[in-house]
Image (cartoon, rainbow, N blue to C red; front, top):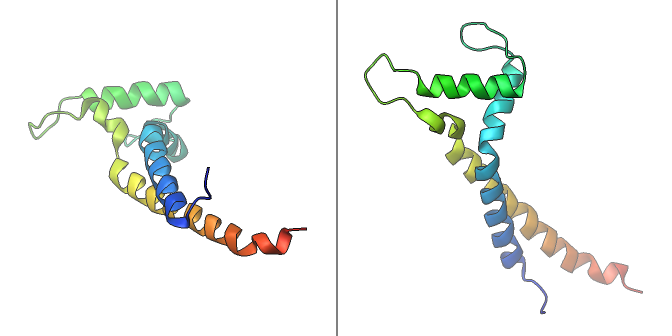
Amino acid sequence: GRPTHSYEAAFCGSLSGAVAAAVTTPLDVIKTRLMLGQDIHGVPYKGPIDTFQRLLAEGNAPTTNGTKPPGFRIFLAGLEPRVMWIGIGGFVFFGAYEQAAKVTAPLFQD
């Protein structure tokens, strides 16, 4: 094919970063809870499976204010800012990489 333009690489980096961020958000929520070490009541997490089970139970617990519990959506906490931040990062990184590769390519030719 033809050479890639910097803006095309930036768009692809943004899109792929946003999709990857969205797909891995549940794992990030579990990782964050593990890094905290304990829940709000001070009970330590025993590992990723224990953390997953406790988050699921927390998501299905009745709320005190009568609103519907989040259910599995508890694993999507922080989805929007994470997708936005990683999407912007992918745009900048891949766009800058492609532009730098084009600018420096003549320096590395035989």
